[in-house]
Amino acid sequence: MHRYPLLLLLAIFVATNAGAALTANARAEIDRLMSALETSGCTFNRNGSWYPAAEAKTHLLRKLKYLDDRKMVGSVEQFIELAGSSSSSSRRPYLVKCGNDSPVESRTWLLSQLAIIRSGAQPTE
Image (cartoon, rainbow, N blue to C red):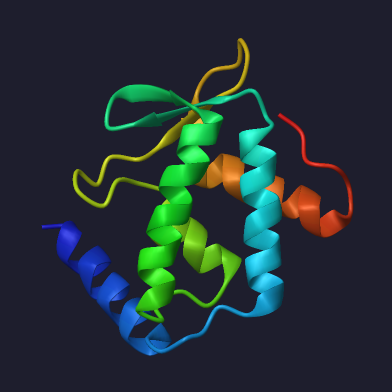
């Protein structure tokens, strides 16, 4: 029962942002974010299986292409929400595990790395 308000909000979000074009600046930030992921040394959990960060980057960029081809993503935050946070098929959240740290949801990890990138500092693990 609690899913319906969330689904309604998602539908409104997608409808109001349909036709949004990914700007060159947003694409550059996504590329930096994906480079940070790839070089982080972290692992990425998708549907219960752990993958190297380089494979995660490839997967997320494939999802970005799908969304971008359909003009469904116009910002880095939309990319994170629509492609980088959970599985499109199972809806299970993605996880990122760095070193001996506990896994965190990829949304949290990606947004923290985006904040670092935007601050002008170097992304970290």
